[in-house]
Amino acid sequence: IFRSMIKSVGLLAGLAVIVSTAGVTVSDALAATLSGEISVKSKRPPRNLVVYLTKPGEEAAPGTVQPVQIHQRDRRFSPGKVVVIQGGAVEFVNDEEQDIDHNVYSLSKGNKFDIGLAPRGVGEQVVFNKTGIVKYYCSVHKNMEGTVFVVPGPYFAVLEKPGEFTIEDVPDGDWVVNVSLAHRRYKASPVRVTVAGDTDDVVVLLKKKGRK
Image (cartoon, rainbow, N blue to C red; front, top):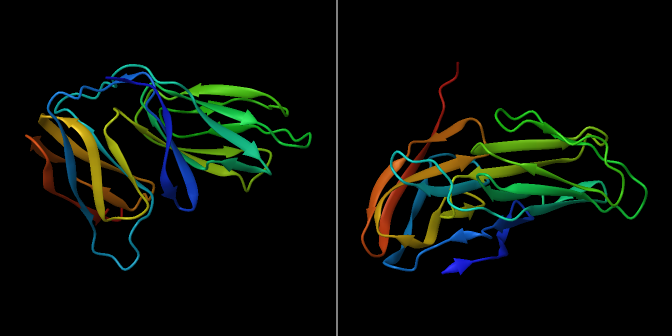
């Protein structure tokens, strides 16, 4: 089945998360639901997580994706957090009601960009070719910041905090469960699973990184 859509998936830290899966081919043959739990022992667990699947030894993203739009309005980014499949683009649109310029940039390794000063009514696209977390800002307005989670494929789930997750339409076979975290002090070791029908016993542990 060829799926073409841009969908909203819940709320993440009070902001809508827009996920683009346009142009991605997903097979319904032997597709299953993979569910489990992200577990952490902490009084203040990290927030804003993306659980995603990769094939063992593979990182290439399938297909192409349509751009996700992030609006600059009332001197803030909306939505402030998005998930993009590797190789996809984000269009930063300045649609302020007043004549306010913005300059969106990021210093994140592998996904650095600077679109330059953009006046009202202008939109600029940025392609994200490296998986990971991209923090971006506006050089004109220091209070403006946002996050792009770049994942390698269409199988993922967005969580506001550690807990249960579900990823649907997963083809049978061997997969690796990964977790992308906005919080830099935590890490998760990938977990390898074999999907043969619905699977619901996956547990991924989050641990604090050792201080250097």
